[in-house]
Amino acid sequence: MFTSRPTVRRRALAAAGTAAALALTLAACGSSDDSSMPGMDHGAKPSTSASASTSPSTGDMPGMDHMAKGNGLSDTKDGYRLTSQDATLPAGKQAAYRFAVTVPDGKPVTGFAVDQTKRMHFYAIRSDLTGFQHIHPAMAADGAWTADLAALAPGSWRMFASFNPDSGSGKGNDFVLSRTVTVPGTATKTPLPAAATSVDIDGYTVTLKGEPMAGMAHPLTVTVTKDGKPVTDLQPYLDTYAHLTAFHEGDTAFAHLHPTTKVNGDHGGPDLSFHAELPTSGNWRLFLQFQTGGKLHTAALTLNVG
Image (cartoon, rainbow, N blue to C red; front, side, top):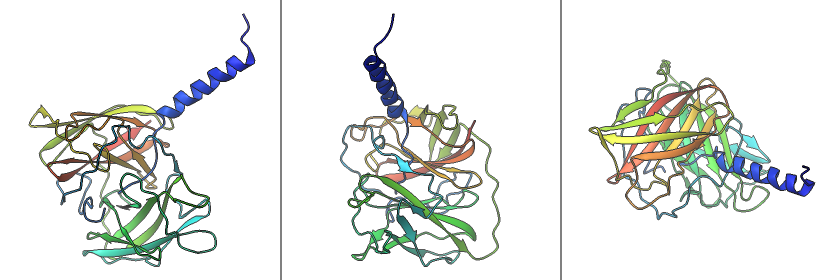
């Protein structure tokens, strides 16, 4: 039996569509007043948490409609550039990191689309994958952004900006760009903790199930419990029940994973499903943020990707 070429083409397109639906967005997000995690260390010890505003739920699968451009390790992509005069920042105290996004003619971009309730998502991570901060900076009318960072430990840091232009050649595309800064002082490297399937944070236990392979879409499940009982009161945070960010050991490559679980008011949990596609093998440090009772929690654990 022979199959017509149109039929073969339709089947190929359908298969491609199915594969694309499983691919995870490698994009970035983040609010200077609601999700900065000062002092977040490798041991995932409790860190300063602050209240975060909840957002109306769409009931869809957030984060599954964008594909970020690259792993965030460049300051330039498709004509857009992350610029900053801040090559160093002080140690041990709050600091402001000032930056802008420019187009090829050098003019700053001032129009950004809202993505997960924010126009700019910003991350800071130390080279040994400690000190994670996730914030939403403020923009001035001229396109200058200011990210108010909590105290930084000495060492090399990478600053990531994630955005979606609402006009121009990049309209409708997610970009993740980054630059490095130095925090003067004696830097002590913290060894990356071994891969683990669970971690305790603020009285909650976060358990991860799944064994992703590099470059392949793979399901991950996160379960949140407290005192051995399932947690079912997770609140929406950035239009989703959990915000999962990953950084690759060695080069700090960036990946952003969203749950596919539908949002239904303040009734999230205990299980959250993800479609993960981490591009590189090795150890990734995962930072999972979730909200209960108006308080944001951040759990950190290491995931080995084969």
